[in-house]
Amino acid sequence: MSIITISRGTASGGQALAERVAAKLGWPCLSNEVIVEAAKRYNVPEPELVKAFEKAPSFWEKLTASRRVYLTFVQAAMCEYAEHGNLVYHGHAGHALLPGIRHVLKVRLVAPLAYRIRAVMERDARLDRKGALRYINTVDEERTSRMRYLFDVDWRDPYQYDLVLSLDKLTVETACDLVIQAVQSEPFQLTEASRRALHHLALSSRIRAALDAHPQLSPYEIGVVVEDGVVTLSGTLPTDDAIRQVVTMAEQASGVTHVINQLVRK
Image 1: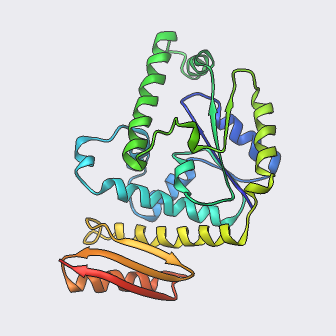
Image 2: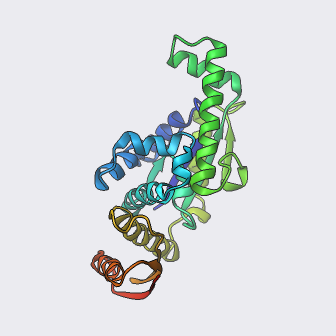
C-alpha cells in the first residue's frame, strides 16, 4: 500500500497527472472528496472549508481557533481515506496532511508560466493573457498565505517534497511514468512501522476533530497523543466537568484501549 500526494500551482497540470497516475495504477484518485467528507461529517458548510484551504486568512480567523478546527476536520477525513489503501490525492495541502508517514510519496508539479496562462485561457474564454496572469498570481498568493497560516510552511519549498517535476520538457505521460517508478521503489512501501504511524495519526486526528466539533470544547487546544491504543490528553480546561467530558469522548473513540489524563483545570 502506498499513497501519492500531488501539489501544484494553479493550472499546472496537477489534476491531469493525478488522474493519469491513478488510471495506470488502478488506484482511487481523490481531490475535493476529502473536503466534502469532512464538511458532511463535522457539519461545516462545504464552501467554508474550501475557502479555508484556498483563500488568504481573514483578520478574524487569525484571532480565533478556526485554524486548528479546519485543519483537524480535513486531516481526520484524509486519514480515513489513507487507511483504506492505495490512493492518489491532488487536493488541498495533501503533502502536509499526512506528516511522518513513510509510505507517502509527496510530489510537486510545476509548469512554465506560458503553459499555465494557456490552460487558464482555455478554461475561461473570457480571459485574455493579462487576465489569466492576474488570476494565476492571485490564486497562488492566496494559497501561499493560507498554507503559511495553516501549517507555517511555504508550500513552494522543494524540500517539502520527495519528487519535483517540471512540465517544461516533460509531458504529463512522462511525468506519470516517473511518479510510478518512484512510488514503486523501496522507500515508499508500507512497513509495519508506517502502518502503525498512520493508525496513530488517524486515531489522534479523529479524537481532535470530535473535540473541535464540540461547541463548548472547540475554543481550547487539547493535546492528543496516541501510541498503540493508549491516548494521552494534555492541556488546560476551565472546569472539572469539561475535563471529564474530554476524557469520556476519548475513551469512546474506536480503537482506544486506555486514556492517560494529564489535563488540568485553570
